[in-house]
Image 1 (cartoon, rainbow, N blue to C red):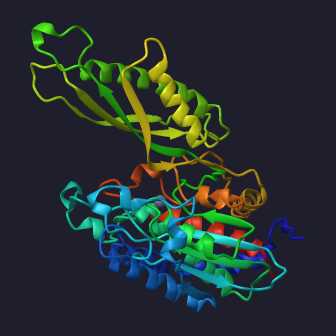
Image 2: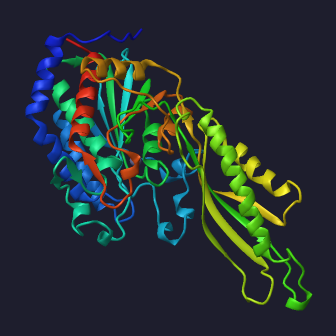
Image 3: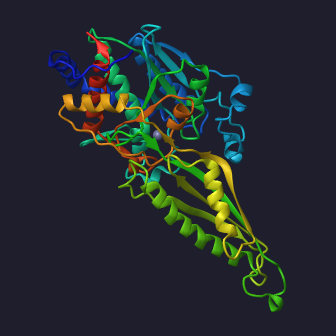
Length: 432
Ligand SMILES: [Zn+2]
């Protein structure tokens, strides 16, 4: 039975931390090199391939056996957790889960030992307009300016990937042998639903725990929110203006749908705030982003479409969300409208296993850093691990406010502290 060691003797940790301190430029160069690959999911896969070759180089040098993960298209496309990206519009019509490279590295110690997965996604959100950045070359630079590293993916989440690799480099290179098997899932396609992680899970091995280094600002997250794209359609009666009566236009109907969605936003906010980890969160759980309809300004609109997205609590299922949406249409008076969820719909997740969070807290203590806990106010690949029975913790450097934003940056110190905590965490799971 695996038991976590309580605390790590200073004589073990001190030299690890000292060697990390000396090697800090290596960490920052690693982030910079990954950012310069611009591994976005939307292009031909070359950027992702380049980033994966850096990850492979690092893992291989540490003794990991690294392989690209391939799953037959027919198998993955029929998997209940598969995200049908190819249905997301013309931009994705040629999507294949095989295009962007996902790889898995294994440091196998012992068949009897437990297995931990470290997960990082190398795919980043595209930069559509470099001019929105304060310097139009900054997005692909990995430039260090003052206390920050700039570039697309610095926070979400090439910093986290680099931090994990850097920690392993110093722990495993320091004559500590782990007491557990370590699997590194270096995945693509997280930003478009998680098919990279799904491939790793289909291929196995199944792990006892997973840790995902998404940007949590160094708080420990044992839950994540769900995300759902909805589409409402409303109908009216197109008649000559002189014959039209009040409320007959699909626009009148959609305005009422919108009003009721505002009520649902308040309700969702309360539901989410009742979840442990989200009590202090101020997340806006519902956004409407697109409305279209009608033909002739003088004729009541026949049809109107309204689209938006909403967050669900870690426990709410897709079906419960669908029911809440349907309810707003039938409440008095019923509306001539329908609402559906598209397949861009992901459940939240929850983990109650305390092994990893407690070990992280312990690692923080050995560095005189007290780590807080809160929920992760976004969906991520956590749900894929938890649904398949692997307790998962999200813990990483950087703040979600920077993710996908112009001038994305990561604080250099925060990245370094993250690496130190992970190093102490892994060292604690290792034997002398
Ligand atoms: Zn991310």
